[in-house]
Length: 166
Image 1 (cartoon, rainbow, N blue to C red):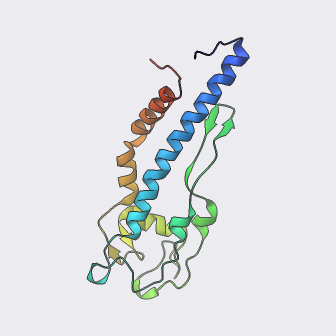
Image 2: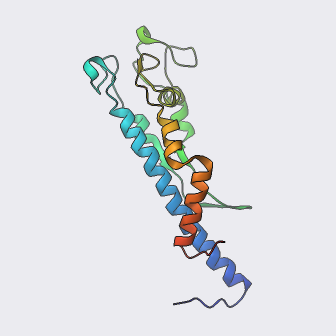
Image 3: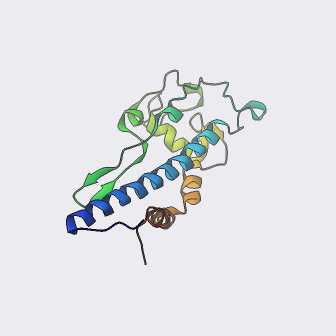
């Protein structure tokens, strides 16, 4: 059933609602792709005997557990959301870092969450000790189609939510 728009305020309210729905769909798609890549990172068989379990450090699961997607928020220019890791994860220091295999990017005998995200992006596990060959962050962005792919996804979701685009 078509909606009858009564005035400009009603049009803005209806359009805002549909844009927010389209953003929610887009956010969920991005989160799903990144989440799958993080899961693959944890299951990358790069350790002794192609095991997925490191023998040189204990996994905390913090990387996987800390991936978040924000709520859609209103800004002066429109709406926004984020998918990624918050500041608490970026500064988190992993316990039991094995100095035999290297140092965190900060040069200390500790790895932060930011260090681990950089290792994951460059295809490494356990610092620079085990190369898996998968640059998981790049793979996520490639699967999403980069900036243009994300914009196309959002446009598709706008249409799904009833916003006609030319």
